Length: 542
Image 1: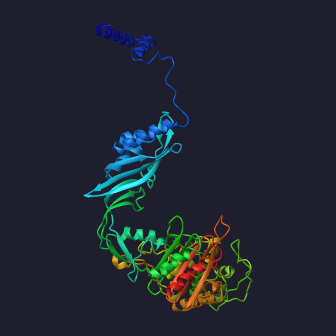
Image 2 (image 1 turned 90 degrees about the vertical axis):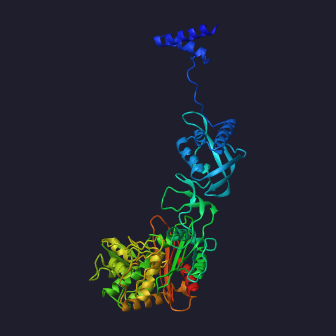
Image 3 (image 1 turned 180 degrees about the vertical axis):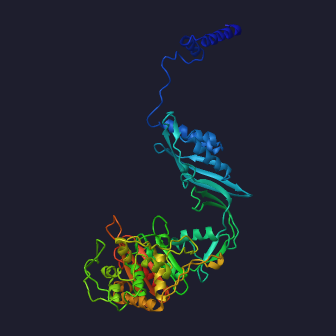
């Protein structure tokens, strides 16, 4: 057939199709295009797990395109091409990663491990980058194609949803945090301080006199979360940041919290408010010592006792009977199992034994109201005053409530919320009579204003200190404090938590010019877990 004839036939077919001959015309055109008769319909979409050959082919195409910097092409071999393209584009453009060489390993089922070697270049600085990752090949739901199952961790194992990679001058210079005597504090030597040191760098890096470096970092979607460094191209010059911490007390605190899971402790210097140590033993890296918001149990009786004394309800040697139970607005409160009643007890005796019913029996005496405990906590102990410690902290909550929670609040249950920082401060205020807001970094560095409160009357502070001394030497804290010398005092606490078999263990105490408080989740009685932690810290701080 000559060219002219062929053109005519094709032209005729086109005319027939336009004219509506339909099915027959479709068959002729299909035959000319080599597509068969068309009677079988579209090919069925593949289903089931991808085969070994499909896994090999899909992973190879994806890795080859990524290696060559063809982000869009690489993304097309995934099951989420739009999101994949953004991260793969940032890999080259924002992270400045080039000369990428990817070496796949042997597939394990549908998972293909691989290693990456590349170079990061930025502003004349360069450094090799190497790491290992893996991908998994799945069957596309709608297309039936074998595709890479998209996860950010494919690009780098530390990436999570919404993260990206960026190379740039670090937002803040590195800092060399030092303790009150000039000892350098590092994450390696004091692991519990890791989040605290990161927070200090974020806040004070630009005020400590250092010079920023150049880093490849993981940038998180949550702007409140600091960048995670991956590779340092050029080290910055660290600035020196002086903290109030004591390396010796911090070391003791780190060791002490390791004795019990989910424990936190804080030590402060009552005469100044300076934080001497902060330590946590938690898997989630949450700074519960500063940011926790849980019921403090009977350690709260320090504030309740102060309220009773300040309002003339009773005094250290005044009456505070301890019956078996106490009714408050329809709810019955009891003491710890095994505590014998003492209807002739003084406040000091009920305090050192931690008698719940004694305190509940007294909170409806004139002139006390629903607001009295809140006023005492805020005006005298400085709680809820927006403390500016130098890092994020929560400064307690003692809400004014009525009903059963008014009684529960008085014994550290109900709606009261505290943490070891606030309870260490409560002890410091109780024994000195003066509220000094705790802080980690001098307020002179950034001109921040510390919270203030009127503090306690001298007579109230003297009584609280003596009751805490009796508790440490004759009461519920005796066993934990027995090996300590000097001027000592303490208060135990256990806080019940809904849905848990064991209560949280609380303990706060002082030794000379050091006050400390600890909490152990599900640690039982105050002296069982939190008590030994506080004793170890006080021993180091003396």
